[in-house]
Length: 106
Image (cartoon, rainbow, N blue to C red; front, side, top):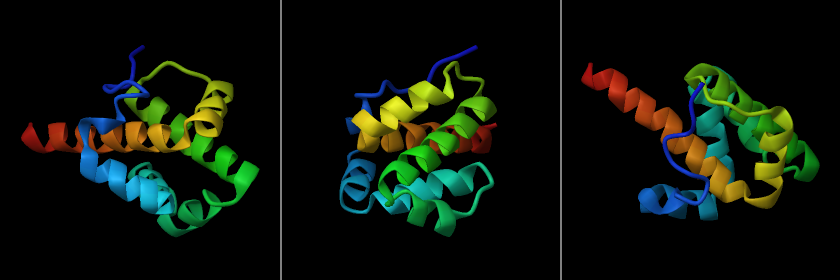
C-alpha cells in the first residue's frame, strides 16, 4: 500500500489552499467529503463540532485513504485531526485534487 503524496507538514505546497483552510476549514472539509462521494454541506458543518468534527474529518480521511490505497488506521486519522487538523485537511485536499489532475492528464 502507499502513502500520501504530501507529508502531514507539507501543507505549504499549496499556499492558496492553506489560506482558505486557515480561515474557512469547513469549506475544505466539505470539499474533501464531496471528493469521496459524501455530502459537502453535512460534513462541512459537522467538521466544526469539536469531537464530532474530529470523528467526521477522520471518517473522510479514511475514505480518501481507501480510495487511494494509502496505509493507516481510523485511530491515527483521529489523532491527525485532533493534533494537526488544518494540516490534515490540506494534505487530504492535495491528495484528492492531485488525483483528479492526474486523471485529467491521462
